[in-house]
Image (cartoon, rainbow, N blue to C red; front, side, top):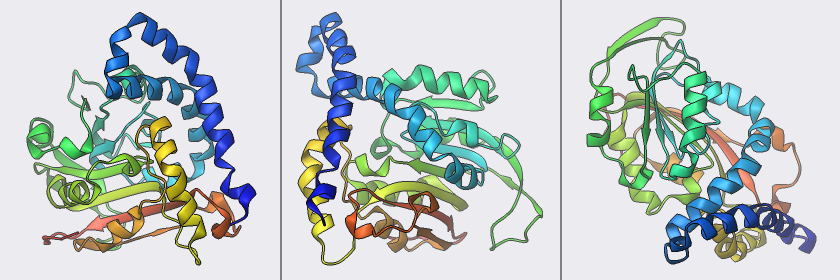
Length: 294
């Protein structure tokens, strides 16, 4: 990897710190206790940072999101919902309930605003906002929202007859899990993914993701640089690890009926060996009679 490409991360880090320093400082002055609460201070920083990054990033990923998220159906769980940028891409005719999982409460007002604009409301049970991370999620958190609805949807999976209407009684889990640039921050990722896929996602359900992953290009110097920068990057960007083999871990889980991941079109055809940020888009369908393992 060329040194200029290996160091290309520095402007991103500087921009993030420069644009977020003052609002974070104001938050500290208003609440000095943040200085002895590292997690809350990090959340405060990320909430300010995403106000700067969120809209521009969403616009750059618009084409990919329209295709990927448009497949979501039934009860949808959005991991690390951030500022709610997933919501406008949901097809309201197919999605019965939107559950936003976002531990950073500083982002909740924007999630709620976008959910209401899209027709999802807490008052009628179509919108749920949970203040916890994916690593803490259990079926007990979801049971009140996922056991009483009957869903009709148009199946587009190759495991079903295309274009037919399928009716099902919702189980205790969810029908679609969406992760957009979230799995890089999960504590205990193997255990968390295993729980999400085995217990939270209903049989026949969808897992949709867009994540940055480990650069597997030989001879491995790009992956080395990902590891080099991760300790700094994760401090600034809420625990994000640049070089996780997320796409490999998802593929290796044993309970998929079909699926796969690919390089997103918007990244073009340039040599991935010169990229610090390598992304994959994935769509997987859970088998209807499995007990998969990761």
